[in-house]
Amino acid sequence: MKSTLSSNTLGIYSPLFSLVITLALLSLGSNVHAATGAETYQQVCAACHTTGINNAPKLGNKTQWGKLIKEGQANISADGYYGVRAMPARGGNANLTVAEFAAAVVYLANQAGAKWQDPDQAMLKTINERLAKKQAQAANKKS
Image (cartoon, rainbow, N blue to C red; front, top):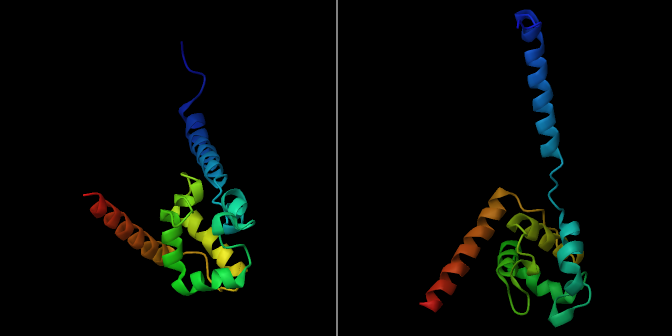
């Protein structure tokens, strides 16, 4: 049985087919949404930081957040991500990335008067370095 498509026809449609596949794959990637700090706050943090349960600093409370803001963005982001006082690691959401958590910290701190920017690669590196130190200290305590 002979194919009814000539080599010229395949030559025309092959690049078009490749383009359609590429665009389809790119559109799938564009549907991936990294949560903003405000979205992460609403989804993960609001239950405690709106009410102040377990002494969580309340959203917008300048007195409670002032001391934390002075500690610096990297420090409170790493400490909170690791877990501090009554706060569980990652705010209790095991799927939360460092970047998402740090953006939520920025959102919370800025509501209390900080002027922080969402974490860039340099800030994330600093946060991850502090996290590594905290993990090493915890491992040393266990040994």
